[in-house]
Length: 435
Image 1 (cartoon, rainbow, N blue to C red):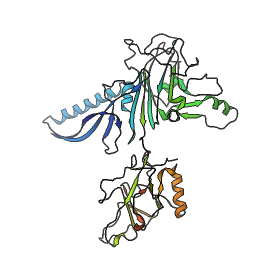
Image 2 (image 1 turned 60 degrees about the vertical axis):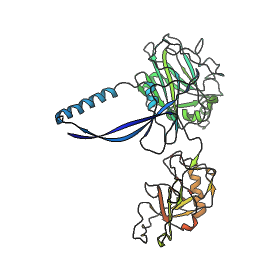
Image 3 (image 1 turned 180 degrees about the horizontal axis):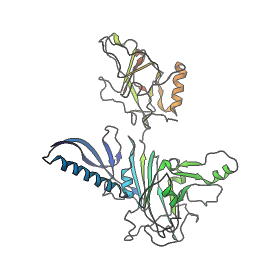
Image 4 (image 1 turned 120 degrees about the horizontal axis):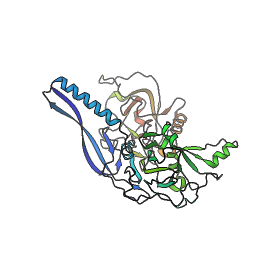
């Protein structure tokens, strides 16, 4: 029997993890032999990047078909058995995938060692965290502690913007009740202080049965976008009739630099904590926007036809980058605007019909402007409408289909350089936000 199998081959290199936009098969994983390079508060884990290279391997075998089917059935049973085994917390941090162009950082407090008391792993009371409401008696406490009526406190130091991530904690009840509470946020103030403080959390039993948190044995995990914090002071004002927003996600809290970049954690009071960790996705350090360039070919077929492409034969080294942009947002370039329509595909002088990148609309460009003058895509849409009239908007990378070219009716003589365009499904591909 001859079988063709596609087997991923791995090539590893040490370093930080930028999730490259160049290949759909790039995968970022953390190696098993990670070490904490930070202080007692937590540090960045150095990682190993594994690039999966698909390969087709020809396997020759003379095994009967029945034995082959039995082997397939056994493999399926083994896979189901493995999938039923709870994942470790570090495995969840390892598996969290960041977006194209993002860099992954892992912060770990404590050591995931199945609550082993073999080593001393102390919590940490950060500077400014002095109030007793969210502090254990007698200090921060210890990871893996087995004494009841002993709370635990620690804090992550998170600097710089994050575009997403996951929080993981491994917790085990010491008396079986699971009526303790996990709190997180800015825990330096008293909870009854009317000036407030961003605080989130719930009973551990509620976290295990709710929809926000995932559960793998005694490991709890949730995405930063789904973890909610409330401002106690704002909430008190809201109860008195204010309509101000009082809820934000943990991701927004971290991006706002809450508590000076500290994320405090507190667990009451009959619960052992093995470790906790954050996998953070960092956006590109420099904001850029995606652009297209005009492409021309000799002949009368160019009359009245605009063709914008990711790159051109005359400039092969300067390609567009739809994932993290290709041009710094301070650059002054025209904005490509489009008035969508149903114009028929033109027939070139060669007889070839333009179909693969034909938008069916009119294309025109504005005067050069810096990309960072627009805060949202709505502002760019309004700019095109003011410049050319109702029905016009910024041209998008996929207006010509799923390829990275756009054609439409227009005057090619008016386009001499790269132009700003939009892309809706890549958060780091434009100089402006979606809203």
